[in-house]
Length: 102
Length: 245
Picture: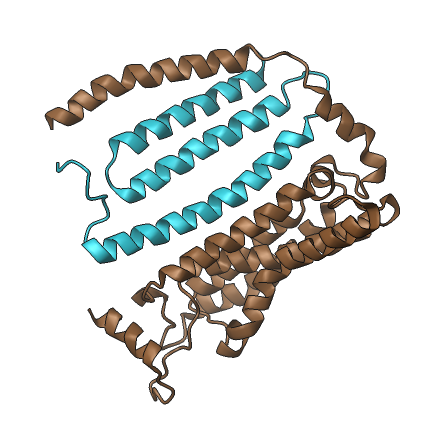
């Protein structure tokens, strides 16, 4: 296994860990963080796979996609955080109403 | 509590299956990258820059970058339209920040702006470019906001909005221009491609930096309440009422 595949597998691990956190946690901030971890996993997979050929320079197309993705992820996170604040200010707690009470 | 354990028992095997499937998919990919890489390398000469990632972002797939600028603007508009009350800690300080914080922000901001310009320029032939430069510019904005600095009301009214839409609009103008000139969206004439890319990247850097910093602020910049409170209108009163609730 070359380093690129290892990093790609780590990215998949991050993605699954984020999905786990997204499903298990009811607090919206944790959910937003979990989605960001999932996104980081996807970026890691893309960057790692771009450089998986041993004796060639890395493929620039996935790199460009990751840069685009990072900026979109930041703006989506900012929007999600504002929505969370809005939910918190309307209802008094930062969870969705259909979440099970602990 | 029981439901949580049940969820855990159901979820872990499902996620392990997903991870195994994804891992198998990644490991079974063909060893050599596909033809896209070769096409980028072959067309580098007419891209106007010498760094392949910048060439892909601003030339070969300029369409992506255009839409991404629109996404940023949309996110900011959505945040602004939520019309959150300004949080207490984000209102300007009544007193000056401490000496160390003040000196540090005064020292760091010009350095960050210099780094922005460097990253913008170096993007033509090395890792860098509009997004990295825009992020550093936004970081300097975030630093200033955290340290309690506020841009003057005169600048946040119209000028800020012009800077915010400058990136997408210049992109669209150049798109229309290339559409008329070359018959294809964002297909620059090879001789002037470098010039187009520099113009686009500069405007995009300013827009990205301003948008990200504004997203960090999280509220629409409003007129700062002075102790006089001379210019009150109904909207501001409503905001104040909401703050009191």
